[in-house]
Amino acid sequence: MSGDFRTQFVREPNSLRHHPALVLNADYRPLSYYPLSLWPWQEAIKAAWLDRVQIVAEYDEVVRSPSTEIRIPSVVVLKEFVKPRKRVAFTRFNLFLRDEFACQYCGAKGDLTFDHVVPRARGGITSWENVVAACASCNLRKGSRSLRQAGLSLRKPPRRPGAEELRNMGRRFPPNHLHESWLDFLYWDAELEA
Image 1 (cartoon, rainbow, N blue to C red):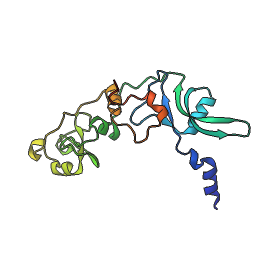
Image 2 (tube, helix red, strand yellow; image 1 turned 180 degrees about the vertical axis):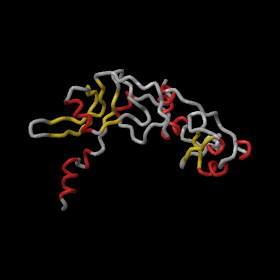
Image 3 (cartoon, rainbow, N blue to C red; image 1 turned 90 degrees about the horizontal axis):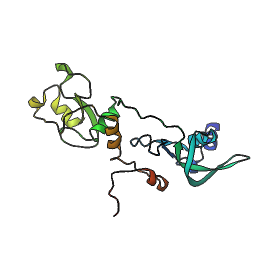
């Protein structure tokens, strides 16, 4: 057994690898929905130890030191409010989120790239108002031509999203795994029981 393998095993036993903590702002709302604001269990314990968070839910698993036994936090709340950003960064991820992870020409989901509506070769700039998510097929079909020349149309006009709008958009895409202790703090677009 190599030393590297043993060190990795001791630092993060397999049974504790998948115990992230949902991080809530001081107003009990997630810092972000997509990606969901999660910390590794080690960060959650450290923040609790430093009195930066309040633990509101825990896993059944514990970690031990020679003198202490601590249940692993599953939901933590920041003690100080973190003001959400007003300006949305122009990133590939945020662009795809704005466009709901769908090609803005044909609606296909999956392997996406981005496309300049007014091609750069024709003076188009890289901005919220000129870039859309596109599948490879539509992107190749359009090339450096105009929408009319390529016989394509946009599903919706591209524009700069607001921060709250993008946060709400993220609520439409819950992650593959939601721990039961998180559900009371997440408000996905699901119909409530009457």
